[in-house]
Structure formats: C-alpha cells, structure tokens
Image 1: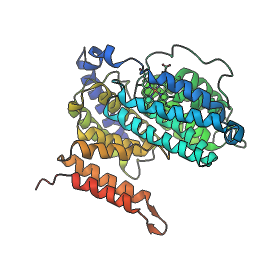
Image 2: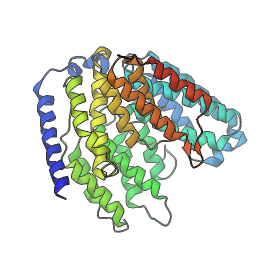
Image 3: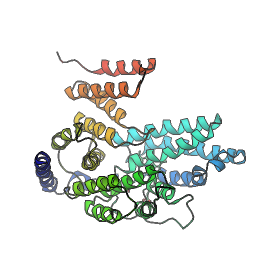
Image 4: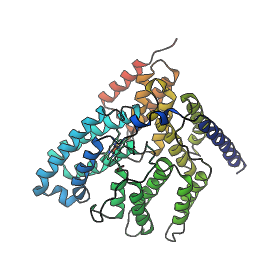
Length: 391
Ligand code: HEC
C-alpha cells in the first residue's frame, strides 16, 4: 500500500512537470502549420462512401455470403482497396505513423479481396470488419476538437447498438458513437451478450475521451455513471474504478510543444514502472499507455521527420503492445521496424531489435515449442544486420 501511494505521488509530480513545459511555448509548430496540415484528406470521403455501401453486408454473415450479392461486394472491395493506394499521396498523411497505418491497411484490404474471391467469405467478412481498426489506428492519433459537421440519419447504419457504435467510431463520428456505446453498455446483459462487447465498448470510450476529446474530466463523469450498473460484477467495477482514479490524475494535453527529447524522457519516466509483472495489468496502467502514446502520436504528426527520435518509436511500440486488442492490426512490430530502419546506429535501435525479436519469438511459441517460419527468421536477420555495431 505504502509503496503504491508513493509511486502515485511521484507520477503526479511528473504530470505537473510536463504540464508546465507543454504550456510554456506559445505559437507552436502545430498552430503555425495549421492550414497546410489540418484539413481532412479527400480520400476519406471516398472511404466513407465505400464503407457505407459495405456496411449492411459487414454486419450480416448471411447477406455477405449470399451468392446474389457476390458481384456487388467484390466491386465494393475492389474500390475500397484501390482507394487505399491514394493514402500515400496525401500531404497531411505523410508522417511516419500515418504511413505505417496506411501501408498496413493497404495490405490488409488486398488480403480481404483475395479471401473473398477464393470464396472464404466468413473469414473475409471478419477481416473486413477488422479493417475498421485500421481506420481507427490513424484516427485515434488525431484530437477531434469539434463535433462532426454532419450526422448520420437514423437507420442509415445497420446492426445492433454495439455494431453501430463500432462503425461510427471507425468513421471518427465520436459523439454519435458514444451514444451507441452508452446504450450498448447500459443494456448489456451477461446472459445474452458476449463480455468482450462490453469490454471493447468501455475501452473505446476511454480512447475517445483521452485521445480525441482530450478530456479526462468527461471520461470520469461518464464512467461514474456506468459504475451505477447493478448487473456488473465486482471485477469489472474495480477495473473501471481503477481507470477513474488514474484519469483523475492526468491533465489534458493540447498540442504538445515539448522537444522530442523531453517527451522521450517523460515516457521513460512514466512507462517502465508500468511494465512490472504486478503493474502491467493494473487498470491505471492502461490509461497511462493510452495517454502517453497519444502525446507521442501528436508530436510525430505535427513535427518534421528530422525532429523525430528512436525513443519515440520504441515507446509507441511498448504502449501498443499493451493496448492493442486487434489480432490483425498490431502496430508494435511496425514501429520497432521503423525505429531500426530510421536510426540503425542508435543504441535505442538495439533495444528496438531486442523487443522485436522477443515479441516475434513469443508469437510463434506454442505448447510444443517455437515454430518460426523460414521467412520470418530471415526477416529478423535482415533487421539485425541493419544495426550498426558501434564497437
Ligand atoms: C493514414 C491514416 C488514415 C487512415 C488509414 C484512415 N484515415 Fe480517415 N482520416 C485521417 C485523418 C488525418 C483525418 C482528418 C481528421 C481531422 O482533422 O479531423 C481523417 C478523417 C476521416 C473522415 C472525416 C470525419 C469527419 O466527418 O470529420 C472520415 C469519414 C474518414 N476519415 C474515414 C476513414 C475510413 C472509413 C477509413 C478506413 C477505411 C479511414 N478513414 C482510414 C487519417 C486516416
């Protein structure tokens, strides 16, 4: 008890420190570059159209696999997949972390198309639904200052409350998404609904409030309301209460105008204590992983490539390992690879490689030992050879 009190106290100290440095420089880069870098990339509106056409099929395995819809769906998939190629041409999206997501989305949609054509329709449908995690992996990097300019009409989106919320979340319509998540959360019934729905809905809310709305205060209000739910088990209550107390300790950060070095130092103060076996799965740690990675994303997306440091990629990867729920959209490995490719002679690149090697080993380790495919071994070797040994 005494120990954790002390740790919380020192975290608080770090937060007020970063709050001070963040507020000390006015007229920062993000603001002066506003016109160039803040408009919605045009390809997004095509994405919107593309996903809207697919949405009724995405939520129904019957419609999705019906041979009568095959031709239509194939065309929609083809269009969506071609649109992703335009992601690499947008100036706004030309930042390190946007490009990582863009490339992943491209290869993901190519796979969905292949699976569909091969007739593996249910798998293709699941993968297509996971595409929305690819959209969100970019969108959750950008604060959403205003409500969306327009709203969906009632019944325009199909599915249950949770499915509607997920779709709206992927499209960055956060206020509408929150309404459906709240409905799904309050109507959740352990007998009829999967627990994973509830858990995801709660985690999405957390992400919206911390990353997009940057308002720990609104998050606290909303979760306090959820905590009245009589159907919740004690374990869930204690998880969400843990979030609330962590949220009470963080300050919202608009436009982090610190240097990469200060941000890196901040992360290396806050994150390592969260990685101990005891702390990793504490609810408060989840909040901090979301918070710190949000600051790093904002930094990367509003600064020149030359200002980036390997630490930023390393800490992003570490956060992503603890945050990612998606089987298909794990970005951690990709950030570690960026760290090595961009900074091969930095000692941090060695840390990035060590982490890459150990997560790769883990993912191929089963009850009967390690089964790493040849091409994966080869890829690891390539990254290892990029490191410039400083003897
Ligand atoms: C490479 C990064 C990236 C990917 C991938 C991405 N987006 Fe976006 N998207 C953005 C950015 C940046 C914005 C602008 C955010 C802002 O300034 O408010 C945006 C905005 C949008 C908007 C405008 C929301 C509004 O009404 O204000 C829609 C709709 C959208 N994206 C749909 C999609 C869909 C659907 C996908 C997935 C198929 C997707 N995006 C994938 C980066 C991305």
